[in-house]
Length: 271
Image (cartoon, rainbow, N blue to C red; front, side, top):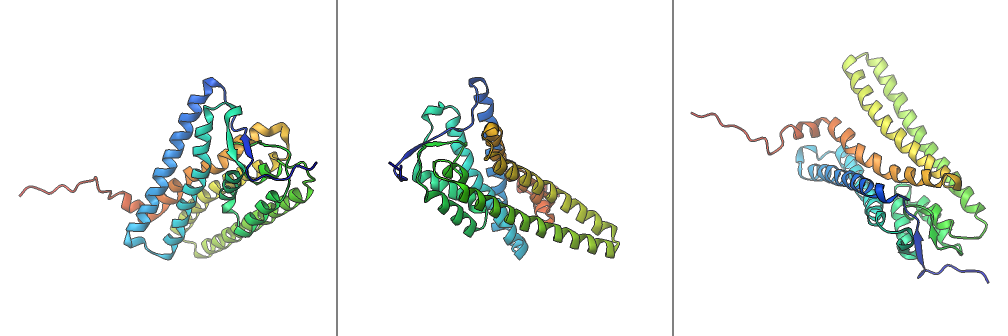
């Protein structure tokens, strides 16, 4: 008899496989990184919210970046921290909660892409109850099924290639336009600023691209499952930690505000 999808089913999450000796260092490292991400990104959100001098369209768009970093990391890291000291056989999540977590993780693609991919996965019946990943995501959901997954794999790879291709094309076009402006202006200060901004942005983008594409590819190769798990975690942790440092400290108004932080008391000269 075909096993139909049961929304009340309890799933087991494999999680990160760490030894007893390495559990504490991994927990402390993840916790410190998570706290840094929360403090730095929430700090930027608060600054942009209360500082009227930077209530400009550019900063309203910039406001979205730390907000996304906070939400995406919160979806992933606390659950990882909770499961590190648990035995693999004791790591459970309900099917509904798993679908919600998967949607939260993929919310940084376009909404239509996320709804399409999650929809293709939850329509499947499944004969397994093990999530072969540190957290629930779309590939983990459709791996629960024993049906033919050709449609999911083809559409998943196709849409990933399309959206990554559009993203890379837009960035390449932007860089070319910036390069043209710099060459025409022959302004050394402008060229230096453009190089500094673009190089740091490119580093973060390449890290995101590398981790994201590696995780997508390794999901299809069970022999490299453990490497795929680590890569998928890094995809949500490293950019979220680097973004507030790179974009926050490189923004002139934010840097100037940090130089005038409240605890630098103004010394009033004695009369």
